[in-house]
Length: 213
Image 1: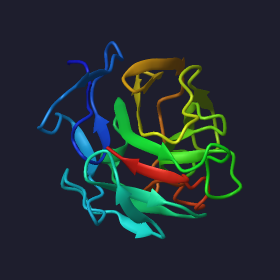
Image 2 (image 1 turned 90 degrees about the vertical axis):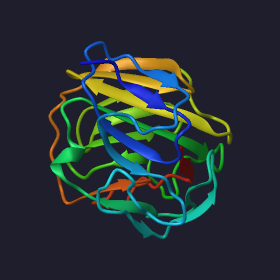
Image 3 (image 1 turned 30 degrees about the horizontal axis):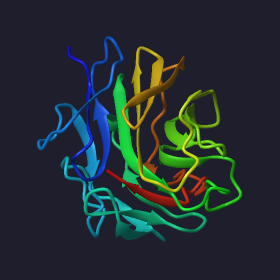
């Protein structure tokens, strides 16, 4: 029952199911996948999941140079990478991390929404995203929401973002530094699809920029 480790130097988007007794995230320079890896989408010219799950389907998304290799590029409404959902995407304790880069400082989403999602499930599921002011947010879709209170992403540089959820405690990290904490009911519903870069059931909240690792 160890602490989760956030691996900054592996390419891709991560979803990890890990026990988090002290909800502490640690960054390490690593070259092997972390234990408890649930999903790893490296965004190298397709939606392959290197954790062994079904690959993602690009919906209007493309590719651009990322932190390592390529990243998923989103520049319009409704764009995302849809991922088939399994129960593995709803571990009781989880960590989600990615590199993100905004396209613009005056807009966070490719549509008129007031949130842009980095990774999200549909109604009743969870979502990690950014608010219009650049603060990280973690939400039960169509329900309660917890927002970071520090380190808003307000420029167009690459930033590493992460959230850990354990026993209902939510902790945010930006570039390896704590950015806020809160609490949320940790029991989420599962649908048919999750998505990188948007909400899958409505197509709303498409992230305007790059998501990579």
